[in-house]
Amino acid sequence: MFHFFKKEEIGQAIGLDIGTSSIKVVQLRREKEKIILDTYGEIELGPYAGKESGQAVHLGEEKTIEAIGDLFKEAKITARDTVVAIDPSAGYVALVKVPKVDDRELRTMIPLEARKYIPVPLTEVQMDWWHIPSMLNIGKDERMINIVLAAVNNETLAMYDRIVHKLELTNVEYEVHGYSLLRSAPTQNRGMILYADIGSQYTTLSLTHENTVLDMHVISKGSQDATIQLSKALSIPIDTAESTKREFGYVGDKSNPYIKEIMELSSYPLFGEIARLSLMYERKYNQNIEGIILSGGGARTKGLMDAYNSTVHIAGRLASPFDQIEVPAFLHEMIERVGPTYSLAVGCALKKLVPQI
Image 1: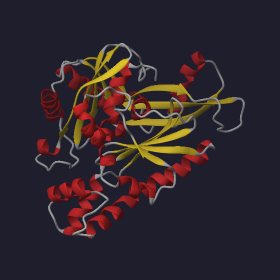
Image 2: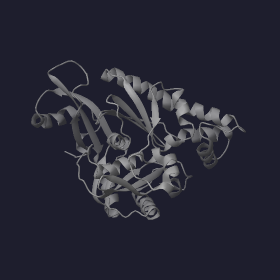
Image 3: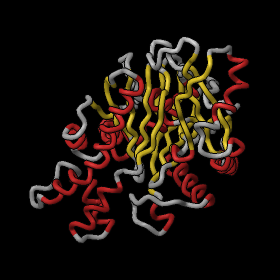
Image 4: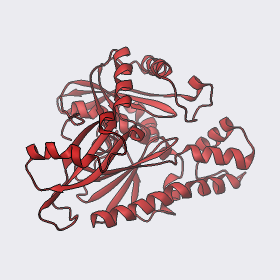
């Protein structure tokens, strides 16, 4: 069994989030009861593929290693113990209903059941599973129980292994999105919470209940869609469209009312899909979603919550992963602005330092 959730408490750790348009890193350290930010950084991947900053690219292994090495130098990373966020497009998370048996029998049964849910041969993945909270009312058959099954492609894990080996990182662990986000953006609500991590190329939804990930879904829409729409509608280059999006966002520019209109139109497919899947989850689990937490680089676009609220009718908020971390005073303003971008990286680093989830 692949142990996604192995826990090991140490004093200093790196959280690494390898995205399609940028890589984010956070280095945290623990001093008694305090978690302190040592350093953090982000590097754009577009230039490594001859593209513009902000564009989603698929770098080869060597280029990825080069980019991470450059990021570590720029951010002055010194720690070696690392947790890496798993690319959600290489993972599968599904609710599975199985007969009520003890865990020893369940371990034998899981591979047989997994074939019904994992769309690739089981020899190509590593799997883990966990029980869901008993108070969730999913079906009424007392002879059955519900578990969550997770699997990750061996090829992806092997690539990560080669990358971290060449970077001389140690005690490396890998983690699915939902648990990193639960850790970096916790909530006091005991009901179902949906985390929406908005990347450049796609958005990952992680449905959670208390400290358990129930479901995961990848939407093939992200913040790059707005850049492309701005470029086409205003007949401007991609790099100009990206800088326009970053400067004005959904708030728009009074001198050019079309920017706000284009941005709002570009948001409907993503937020409409989030609204649709939220309803699907509520029906599937027979419970209301109490809130949605938005994270990722796309979540820091100006005016995002106004666009969200016009389409999605579940209370939402931006992730603020540094709230539970001691940050140097001179960084407070910057951290508040870029915080959602580092949600995954912060959650990964916290896995080593505060291993309660």
